[in-house]
Each structure stands twice: as structure tokens, then as C-alpha cells.
Length: 234
Image (tube, rainbow, N blue to C red; front, side, top):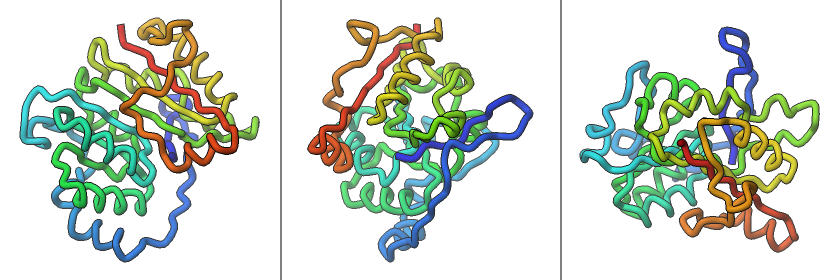
């Protein structure tokens, strides 16, 4: 899944951790954007979301996913956990359209999507102490060493999301690039505000609630590894 942008240094230029590679919208995606956005889309604003109003209920735990790709796994998770609220943030228009269509097809009421830059969404729209689970699955690995600065998982990223997490809230990341997994582990382990949920302070088995994607299954057949990390806010 594609990730979104980050700030390298406050008030200086941003370094993007994604590149917009917009493909042509399918007819179904275009129709979904036109017809379904008013019901399940959240427009970007400079004001904090009223989550009770957005979802029409109070006190439901909130999962936020950054960079959900085409949304298949996010829709599956939402359908299997109706007691939770889900917000997905994605910058790629085809993914938004595909996710909206799946939300309709599965008759899901507990998922909303934001078509915008996640840094701006978190800074302007996500209330403090509101997120129970933050998900970042298969962000762009920027595998060339000279591009590692574009990777989203850095201390600055944690500084952005940490105020939004409730006490006991969980950060869950997954990647199929071992080098990136090692970097994620290093960054997360160095933050005293969170604790590793792994028994040996490394990686955790894939939890049942994270669906296997077609991409991941194909990688497994080719012998590729996948690393899950889960850290809890103290």
C-alpha cells in the first residue's frame, strides 16, 4: 500500500513518502466517487472531526489506517468488527473509488474514507486521544538507499500520531521489506512512549484481524517474508 507524506523538519519543505501514480479511473470507480462519496466520504477541513456525528454513535473504538491502497483489507476488517469505527486515509483516487464501491457492496456503516494527505488530516482533523489503533500496512519501502529519507516511519511520524492515540492505543505496522522492518523496529523501539507487544521485543505474528492480501499471498508463494510490528502507548 502507498503511504502518505511526512515533514522532514517543521516549517521546512516536505519530503514526500509517496508518488502519485494515478491510473485511469474505471467506470465503476468513477461512478462510486460521484454517487457514494456524500455518504461515506469525509471532506478535508481545518477543523477537528466530531466522531460521534460522523458515525452516528458514541464511544466506539476508532481504527485509522494510513494508505489503504484499494481498500480490500480495510473493508474486510470493518465488516468483521462492526463494533469499531474505521477511518481510511488515501491519496490515490482509484483506491478511494474502489473502496467506496466495496463499502456499498458489503453494506458497511462503520467505515469512512478521506481523500487527502494524512499529515494534514492528522494535524487538522483527528482529535487528540481518539485513536485506539493506527494501521500502516505495506508503505512504500523506497528500497534504494538514497531514497530512505522518503520513508514515512521516522521519529517525526511518531510525534505526529502519538497525541492522537489513546492511552493503551496500538500502532500496527507491516512490511514485506526486511530492511524497512528493521528500520521500523529501530524507530519504534527508541520511543519511550510506547512498548513492544512482541514477546521478544522484535516482531509479532500476523494477527487474525489483518487479512492476507493477494499481494501478500503471492509474496508468500515466492518465499518473501512479511514482518508485523505492534506497539502500545504506555
